[in-house]
View 1 (cartoon, rainbow, N blue to C red):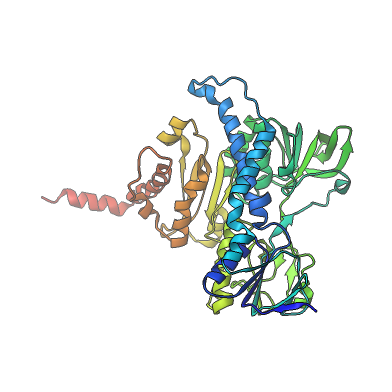
View 2: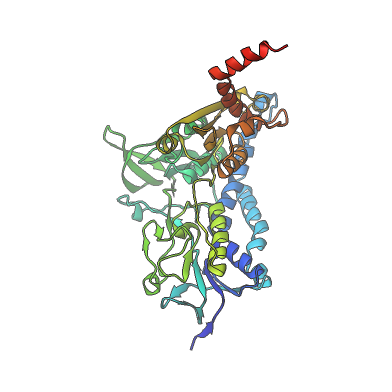
Amino acid sequence: MSDILTPDLCVIGAGSAGLTIASSAAGLGASVVLIEKGEMGGDCLNVGCVPSKALIAAAKRAHAVRSAGAFGVRAGETAVDFAAVMAHVRGVVAAIAPTDSEARYTALGVRVVRDAARFVDRRTVEAGALRIRARRTVIATGSRPAIPPVPGLAAVPYLTNETVFGLAALPERLLVLGAGPIGLELGQAFRRLGSEVTIVDAGPPLAREDPEIVAHTLGALKREGVALHARVTVVAAKRVADGVALVIDEGAGPREIAGTHLLIAAGRTPALADLGLEAAGVRHTPAGLTVSRSLRTSNRRVYAAGDAAGGPNFTHVAGHQGGLVVRAALFGLPTAFDATPIPRVTFTDPEIASVGLDEDAARAAHKTIGVWRWPFHENDRARAEGRVAGHLKVITDGRGRVVGASLAGEQAGELIHLWAAAVQKKWALTEIASLTLPYPTLGEISRRAAILHVADRLTNPWVGRIIRFVRKLP
């Protein structure tokens, strides 16, 4: 007979959301069972954010050496030791892993179960020889790579983010199916490490982002030799003598693009298989679990967080939702998840970062908006660093409050922090214009864009009347 546990909280999945929930709840004195069938830390630590950024960092160093001549530094021929690069990637993962380890969470008072979880009824979860009847259960199982229905794809070898970091040798010619964040980030990284790279997508690259912002990064990819075929029909995938080929149609008839390796980067799909959701009475769609704004599912005892809850699929979103779930599930406090003020970053070079509404969404939501831009080439630090590609675009409502911002450029992922605060706190653009920021820094770009708004307000006829009145004063 199975042992029965009756904790306050049962968490299925030890990724960003699950770990946040488990540690927070245990820290508050709740009894917690955490179930994970794979690696602790989830995709982000093991096959996602962490290894990809470590690979990108190595590729950035290689590119910097090749580009050093512009600064008068002659570095000679760049040689990439791919085995050493991958050792660096594994080392970064290993250094972070103890933070997410079973040992750490056990020490925090969490009962960690390393097995697959499955609901057997509306309240009971089975994991190996255990049955867990928790007061509340949270599904935080994350997502897996989405595999597009391309004819022939199942018959060819391909990589995903789950397998690409296990490569022993640098791909000679890498095909990437998907021009979203993962495809562009890894495509550029492998190009900088020495692969020939071709990226293919049926839609536009980085479809969620503002095209005028994306254009800066696409220009950089082209200059670095990445071939991009967007808005094409992907007819089929097939084996060829030295690897794999994609058959595409750009309007002039089918043609083949061949490579030694194929990477599928066509988005993510919620990992919900074999959870017994029907037995639990938990409704779901292909996009994820059906949840309320408080992240409660159709079963009042079951909550969801992270990618399994339908996204946005970002580690920081999963962590944020985890905090909301602890409030709601343990204490019954009112919570509401709002994705609007959540920033996102694509770690290409130049980086792309966004928060809040884009221009089209802002026009639909507000009667009057303001659009303010400032280019990197007008920033002294960017000039000194030779990193002048990109610009900032800020959107305000009719009252001058910041409702959105996006930018491409050096350290865009760091610069977006200020704008995330502005959107979340509903700051007026004048508040940013009034800041005194250190010179020379890239952060001045934000203030200069804000000053444009102030300058525009000074052209108001009433300002002219006030000035004329002041002139008459003794």
